[in-house]
Image (cartoon, rainbow, N blue to C red; front, side, top):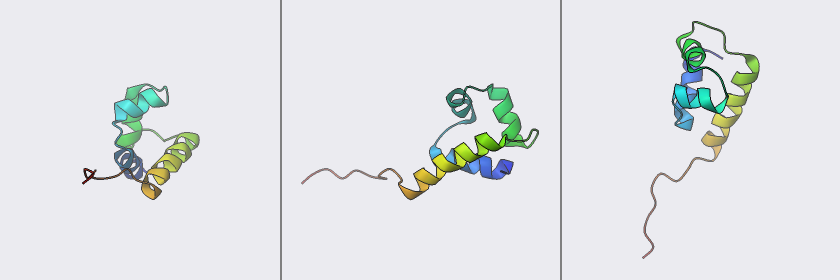
Length: 69
């Protein structure tokens, strides 16, 4: 996973790098290094993030709720 794709996945999930670090129980500095391309993203982290982003893509939340008439 490239750093650009990593950041796009986080954006799709509406997760900040800090939130993602907390979710996967990693140091937020390490996540920032992944996002900047300064360290390799572990394959298991990339695969997990890809699955979650794919779910969001295939079943996004409603963009606007309309009141019942």
